[in-house]
Amino acid sequence: MSKVICVVNQKGGVGKTTTTVNLSASLSAANRRTLIIDLDSQGNATGGLGVDKELINSKNICSVILEEIALSDTIIDIYPDILNGHLQLCPANHELAGAEIHLVQTENREFRLKTALDEIKAGYDYVFIDAPPSLSLLTINALAASDRVLIPVQCEYYALEGIVQMQATISLAKQRLNPLLEVEGYLLTMFDSRNNICHSVANEVRNHFGEKTFETVINRNVKLAEAPSHGKPLMLYEIKSTGAQNYMDLANEIIGREKVN
Picture 1 (cartoon, one colour):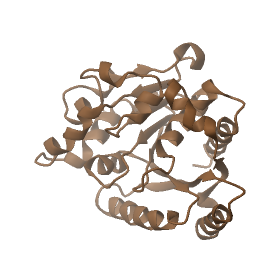
Picture 2 (cartoon, helix red, strand yellow):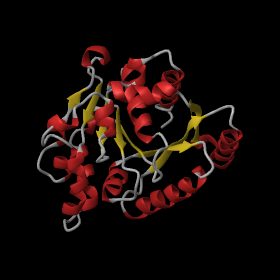
Picture 3 (cartoon, helix red, strand yellow):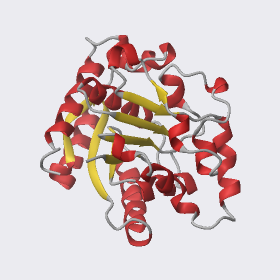
Picture 4 (cartoon, helix red, strand yellow):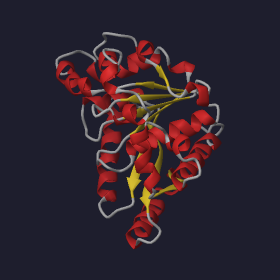
């Protein structure tokens, strides 16, 4: 049974796209059929996987949202020789920025992504939606289409404010769009063991959310910042790095929940 997970935080710079790309790659390496939907007009997940954003033409998520093309017609295999075809991408580029303008006056605008995804999601074990760092029609589409929400939480002073905002958004989405939506987990990112604030934030998140907080913590790691410029998930760029190991641990943690959930 497939699981659709929206990776979202209304606060930018928390490791949302990094998590989408590297967790998906780690799950695909564990023989889970995984699809990434890049729903951010910056197309960072697309570029970070080595896809030229300027060459995808109309075969992208914008055309899907506007109902000009089926989602299945946009799919790109990512490093199929290495990952055995288990990792695929629905790409995005700057065209997506204009999609919301077209959606404003349309009926059922909140469910465009869900309708398109329902046609193909059975072919995957996991679908990850990389949502934009704002509360927009695209984010609402992501929440309406998802089973679960994964929330990256940067270990810094203002992180908890972002969580409060995100909880309010999820609660509203459950009431009005998707009553079955649940939180998959809170993921502590950019953790620096030498920084007292990091420990303080991590403890507060764990105390407040308990088992909803992933055991795995994503440490600050320069290789995580380098890998996107090479168009590779970190496990294909430097598998021995701390960041790659962290995301493989996170993948194992999620796989461990499969029978429970």
